[in-house]
Every structure is written in C-alpha cells, then in structure tokens.
Amino acid sequence: MAKIIVVTSGKGGVGKTTTSASISTGLARRGFKTVVIDFDVGLRNLDLIMNCERRVVYDFVNVIQGEASLNQALIKDKRVETLYILPASQTREKEALTQEGVERVLNELAETFDYIVCDSPAGIEHGAQMALYYADEAIVVTNPEVSSVRDSDRILGILQSKSRRSEMGLDPVKEHLLLTRYNPDRVDRGEMLSVGDVEEILAIPLLGVIPESQIVLNASNQGMPVILENDSDAGQAYEDAVGRLLGEEREHRFLTAAKKGFFSRMFKG
Amino acid sequence: MPEADATQTSQCFQLKGANVSLTALELHFFEEDAFEETLRDKIRQAPGFFRDIPLVVSLEKYEGPTAELDFFKLIGICRRHNIHVVAVRGGDEDQRRLARNAALALLPATAQREPRAPEPAEEAVEEAAPTTPDPAPTAAGPAPAAARLITQPVRSGQQVYAPEGDLIILAPVQAGAEVLAAGNIHVYGPLRGRALAGVHGLSEARVFCQSLEAELVSIAGHYKISEDLQEQGWKQAVQLQLKDDLLVVTPLDK
Image 1 (cartoon, helix red, strand yellow):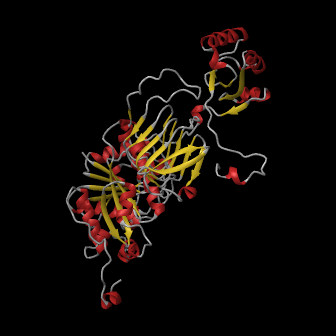
Image 2 (cartoon, chains in turn yellow, red):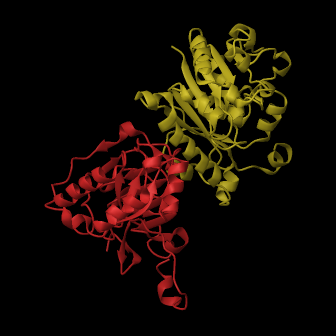
Image 3 (cartoon, one colour):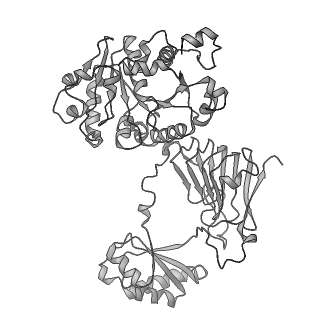
C-alpha cells in the first residue's frame, strides 16, 4: 500500500518544491518506487527543478479529466531509476482539481508505487486542500521567521480538521516539521528564530533542518534536486531527513555556526 | 476600553462590545390566536422568567407564508404580555423587509455565523461529565453546565467554543486561534491567541493560563489587547478576572 506524503507550508517561497524534489529523489534512490505530483496548477515549477520541463506532454489535469492516461503523463526521471514526475498544468485553474479526480489518480498510482509525494501550492485554498486531503503524512516546511511559523500553524490546523483522515475519524495525519533556510549565524545574532523556538511554538516532531545555502539556489537553477549534491551540507541534511522519515535515528547536523578559517571564508561560500 | 473610564469623562457616551444572552422565539407559522394561546401557556409555566424580557424572533424554521407574517400583530401580542420583541434572526429578504418596517433589528441566521471556521478535531474532544446539578438558575442567567475538554493544540485559524460551561484546554492556544466559553477558560499551556470568557455576560468568569502571551483576553465583553497585557504577568502563569469592570491580571503563584 502506497504512502501518501504531502509537502505543505501555507506560506509561499519557503522551499516546498525544493523539498518535494529532494525527498522524492531520496526515497527513490533507496529503491522505493516513488512519484512526485505537482499540485500547483497554473504555476508549475516542479518540472523545472526536476529538469524535465522539456518532456512534458500531458499533465495532472489531463489525467483527471480523462484526456490522457497516467502512463502518458508520468515522466520518468533520467537520474534515478524508480522516480516518476506527474507535472502540473500551466494553463488551467486550480479548480480543475476535483476531489473525485484526485482520488481516482491517487488510487491508480497507489497500485504500483511505494511513495506518492504531493507538492502543495502555497496558501490554504482549494489547491492546497486538495494536495493534503488524502495525505497519510505531512512534511510542513517552515522558515525560521514568525510569519512562516504562523502559516505553518494554520496549515497544521487544516490537516487536523479537513483531511480525509480527520473526516473519517482515522489515525491523524503524521506531522513532520522541516525547517529550511536555517542560518545559525543569524540565529546567534538574534535575527532568526532558533530550532528550539520553532519546535516550541509548533509542537510537532522535527524531521530535519536544512541550512541556508547557495547550493540550493544553484541546484534549482540547474534542475537538480539538492539531495543529489552529496558533498553539500544542504544535500546531506535532506538525506538525513529522508532517513528519519523512514524511521532511522539520525543526529541533527548543521545547527551551529561553523567556525570558518580565513581561507575557507575566502574560497567557499 | 474599561481603563478609559476614569480619564475621559467629557465624552457623552462610550461604545463597548457586549455579549448578551437573549431568548429566541422560533416561529414555525403565525396565526394570531394560536400564537397568543401558546404564549400564554408558556408564561404560565414560568411567569417570572418572561417579565420584561427582550425577545428575538427566529425565522429560520418559519414554514408559513410570508404574507401571514404580521409583525405588528406579533409585537402587539407580546407587548400585552410584557415581552419586548427587539429583533428577528434569519428569514428571507421579504420577511426581513417586513421586520424592518416594524422597526425590528435584523440579526444574521445562526447557520451563517463563521461558516468557514474549522471545527478543531472533533474526535479529540471529549465531553466531561456534567457538573453536579444546580438547584435553580440564578438571575444572572442559566448556570454553566458541562465543561468542554480539548487535548490537542488549538491552531491558528481554529475556533473552539464552549457554549454552556467552562473550556479546559490541555495544550497551547496558538496565535491566530480563538477560544470562547460561557464560563471560565483554563489553558494548561501558553495562551497565544484570543480568549473570550463569559461570552453570555457572566462577569464572574475567569481566564487561567500557564503563560500569558495572548492577543486578546475578554471577560463578559471587557477586554484587553496584547499591548495592554504586556505590563503585568506577561509570559507568566496568571489568572484574569473582572474587578469593578476592569480586567485584572494576577500571577498564579502569589
């Protein structure tokens, strides 16, 4: 039985799509058959980050409306064997995502996949609600700043009250906190909330902390999931997060400011 | 706000938020004689209760024809029995126009209130056993009944309401969340959102919390906003109560 994971946040620009790309790639790299779905109809980005934008023929909405089969719309990743991408439509509205349609597509995917990762659009409207409705687990992506934390709190409330699991009275959606764009230097200077602050406010288990890094931006621009940058701190932090998602015990890294020498400061950002 | 009382005596009046408990008369159809007879019957059962009370006529369950809805007659009958019709609730456009012609205030239908407020995880909410039966309702209104117990965090955008008794929350109330109770509110965790106790006007109601970080606290309509709460007991375990219409914060360890 496939596990459905939604990557959500409420607030925009916090790193949902970056996270969806890396988590799905990390799961697939471990041999799980994984599909990542772009729910951000109208603003499709996931295919850019996954570097498959030139291979999009049919999309999620086409499948929902019966204009294409799943096999026609699924794009096979070129780097990781067991990874597939279901892109969003650029030309439709979010209302094209009907609850019945989404359910049908997810059920069909669940027959063959181990993990279904849903990349939610920002906001708390229809698109975001469709992305989280069928979730078994939720990765709540949060930046260490007050407004992002507030929006994450809002989306946690929606997960508790408007997901299928809550409506059917099943076990609640399993919640994970993923803190992105974390900059220990700025935390030390009091310019950012600390991991402890965010954990205390949101009161859900911490899945990982992704350090702020130029690597993330570069990787996005090159259409490369950050997790594949094995030598980078951000890539390793995502790999740790995937491990924890699968139940492994891993110590949190990159939480404190690195003591950089003069040369490393000059030559490495 | 309550504090302004002492300083601004030159103003002719002051507007205050108030929550008043009203009796609603749910009208199914209107026929003069049947109406008066039923009313007389009800009054006979509890003569003290009906004397000079304000009454809201609820049209949400009205099934009779609009043309028969004669508010002037209805008001007249009520007045003969010392009942003051003040407003209608619900009803369609025509019915509300008739009510307005009879100088009644228009209240929204109850179903339209907070249509999108998500009900926080209902399955997690257990109804506590009712308190010991009270001998009789006091003049201040019906005595608070069962308490409502919440065990999960009340998240931003969620609203939890205990319409009859106390509200007990064993988790944080987050910024952007709202908790309301007819009686007291207890928060065994930080109170970061809004807490409104005694919403039906019970001025003895209190708010207790382990850490006061609230956006707003209100008791029986008297409120303080976050800015005014900073001065005392901020981020401490406190209780809030009304003393001479003034919201007073006291640390719980003293």
